[in-house]
Length: 420
Image 1 (tube, helix red, strand yellow):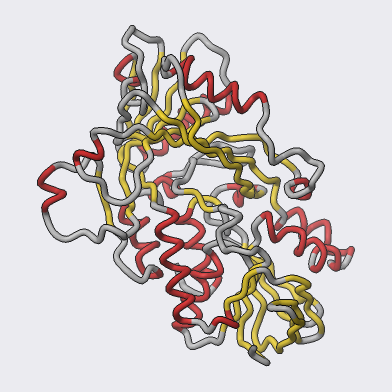
Image 2: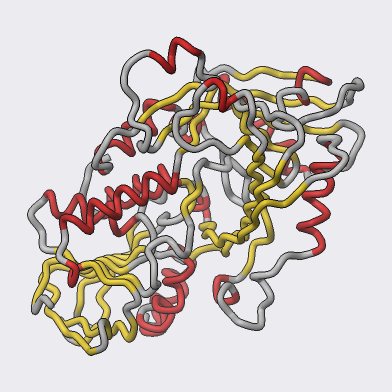
């Protein structure tokens, strides 16, 4: 085990791995500490930006451009050890035969983004505001937005089985991107494991305590201590919150505590339910569709063949749940890890009410917890770091380390001093 190190990275998920890669390129010595037993147990990276309006969120033209293929590929390719492929769906016979494609590479897919609203039914006013805002911002940004009505709107929704005329209308945007999250982050993890000795990338670390200019922690059956020459960088996700509250927030001077907490603390944690549904209908692979509190798309991994695209039956559904107090996320008596009646009702309304399915099967379901931030930090791309000292150790707390994977990579690279 090292006796001293330039920079210690504390966090879960993809962000500390990307930051470590950049710091190693700069010639820094790095130690990664993860209190979880696996890097991706928290599973806090999303394959796409939900583009959802929160209390203080705006869908700006800049945010929309960050979801276009050139911007996404520019962000992801530098830290991945192999190719990151790009695919426009559907794949035709010529495109699948042209050139070599790595069958194991993560793929950035460009799909149409569709928002559907049902006329004659009560809706959240923020949803109407979001649709208007998206249309205005796309036009101002020079992007293409199309208004759709009736079957021309609903038939684009993946899995829609209705045939009769409808009173739906919607807005479709030109192709925005979603990413193979699992392939990308697994590739980055294996790459960093190859570059770092085993005792410099540690999971299941406990009792992490800064003392004077040293950091103490328990790992591999014993206590360790080392001198931190430059700084401790903490990647703030919900699983790291208890440590930050105990070792950082609790020791802020009363004179600055209220002001800094208001500026830097998260507004809350958004619960996201990710459902995998089996559809009897073939799914439209071209569209990521929004309906109420739900986003749905045909599940694809890698660059699919034409035959695979013609027989898609797994519908991935991302449902927005409540915004909760971060302190309640991992409380054993909070009941937040279970499903609610509203969850099943929402899925039933989607499948049987809107999509007109006679029946549906649930393939999988998991709950994710992702921060939402105050003010302009509620949108992806948080633009500040929280710099302090914890018992003599210079410390930086990095926001925006969960959510859309492209934004996670962006923030991780910024934390390592990459000028983006």
